[in-house]
Length: 234
Image 1: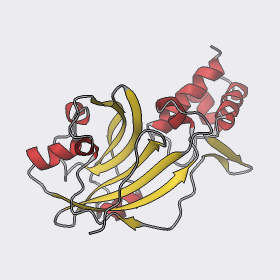
Image 2 (image 1 turned 135 degrees about the vertical axis):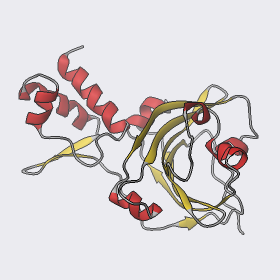
Image 3 (image 1 turned 90 degrees about the vertical axis):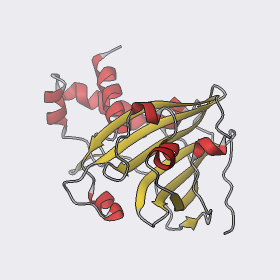
């Protein structure tokens, strides 16, 4: 594999892990980081452009491609947000593969959503949920560390919501959800084994404890042919 392909794959990994969120470093900076020439970086960025992961804005740099978000929020009106594990009836065939798990400082939007100070930390989690050996959903989640202390890889491989309720003794309440249909991106194709033509059910969620305190901002990317979402009236 050529060097520019290796660099493209490494930059893609950093985008997946949200180490690059809105914009990539300048080409000169990337060339220094990877100890290579600017020409090699240009070739690597062309690969990422072809994968529709980034786009260049002349005179302003290279931006990570974002998905449009409709301004329509649906409240699930479910008395209890049980989490994915309970919806599969605690199946022993449900497996969680942790793709990325980091602790970092919150972004401005996250500070506002959780009412956090800039000195507080959040968990940044990416998990693949596998049921009966089939990849079902790709989950991206951000949670304040001080509201869910002790979260670790062992818990992530099982059920975060079960840990919150059974170990921390905190009741989980309602959530606000934004539900859209989306085209698959490179991560969906890679982790959900779907094609570029398969539709994806995208669920963005803000979840609350029973006392109304927000504890999760998440996005789940669901294969269209392996499950659905039931919204109940309260």
